[in-house]
Image (cartoon, rainbow, N blue to C red; front, side):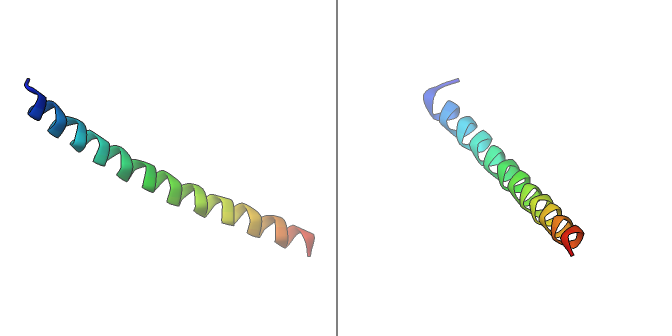
Length: 44
């Protein structure tokens, strides 16, 4: 594998990881909001 192939491989992997992180972040944000909403409901 030469340098160019390696760079392409790394860029593809990086893109996959960025997409995965974005999904995890959206999921985490959702559950954080849901948890806050439930806490607020319990206070009332």
